[in-house]
Image: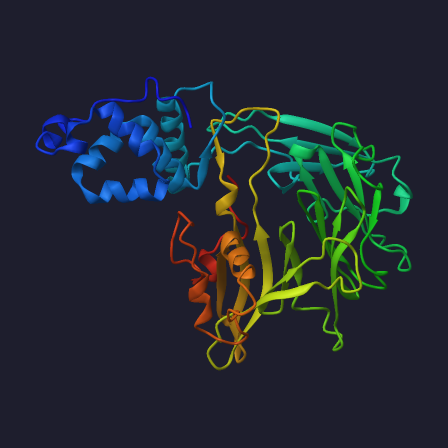
Length: 433
């Protein structure tokens, strides 16, 4: 919390409104503010709805008002120092207005850039150099920063096929770049990830147990796709080839913690693409077809690396004749800024999973199409996964269960689990803060 100095102002008319009350009414405004500052932000919000005098006092006290604005925006305050609270409030309000009005400052960038985790990456034509750039943020005060990665010394780089739009992940706080190689020219080779240091310009990360992590089986004669993500010490990989292989490794120890695979027995080119997402250090989410499944991961590689089933969520049943195909999923975690002090930044505790499904009718697939967007807070899934075994879990196929996945901690909408939206009105990618 920022210092109280220069943040407390007198509540307009507050003195005479409280004058007839003993106890609270006899306290000076400074003491009332100190008491309110000890409240949880949700309790502070409740106070604004109890009485006009509380609302006036909170709105007239910048430090309290700032907490409410951060909560409503899904943000948290940056480090102390730098700008005053009043200036941070002004920037945060301007930031919120820009999103509502669609007036977002955009910097022109080369068409070859790809984005992931709040940074952009440009791969050279010869695939020997990788330029990574973190764009500046006008509102939060994050400066631009760039890194150049030399790929020419990677093993067998000459046969590698890098596609940075879906095969890399960056963790700036750990100076970490994970880059996946898909050997599409040699169907007998295995996909693998390189664990590199950003500041080392492409050298193996000094904390990595090994420079390479193998992910899955040989790709065969397929057009592979892949996804990589980093959560702390863990790296999650999904490889879509002749079959689907999902795995989670500890990149500092080299130990595999979880894996799962599927094979398309109908040779339907895996139309229902699956994906795995790391939720925290002990839980991983698997998305397959129309369902979500959370597994508990073992601390070390054992005899059962497929993990223990924590819960399974069957999405609501569709009307007769309608079908759904999985399109995409996102967990947009806040970008790390270890080298600077942002005025405010996204609050990791309100991170959500977004899953998109294409809904269509079998008889007229092109005319009647909608998109189902399921939005579920990560904190809700983890809380559900930690329920004792004696408590009933979410069972497959029940249409009433998603209502139980509403999180009271989600600030932008307390009743969001799934929303049907016409295809033309849905953004093709999640918003970046």
